[in-house]
Amino acid sequence: MTVEVRNLTSSAVDEQWLKRAAGAAVTGEQFDRSAEISFVLSKGSEIKTLNRKYKQRNCSTDVLTFGNLGFGENFVGEAVVCLDEVKKNGRKFGDGFKKELARVVIHGVLHLAGYDDKTNKGREAMKKKENFYLSKLPAF
Image (cartoon, rainbow, N blue to C red):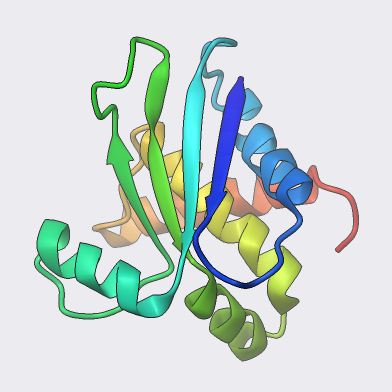
């Protein structure tokens, strides 16, 4: 598995931690060993623009995923993570930045694996998977 990280913000992020969180979900979801996933770390204004353009929602969000974009047979997709939202939600839910970042990264991987959170049943299934993969990571 190859995980690429592009940080478009001025915020420092532990890329190894992000890759470890992604790896937990990628391994558990049995992606091919040659799978490639890209994470782009963005600010609120950038993800809001993407959300409006591709999802027709005029608001910021924590993560947007885009399936294979034609970058090769091993490329699974890209997840755009909004660090502003991760920081805000980490404080809001009392989990802190590191755990919230792991949760959002895992959530993005689950979307790339085909999970959908448009229904209550789908949200519950994803939350259960997120918590399972979070439990596989070292203490926060």
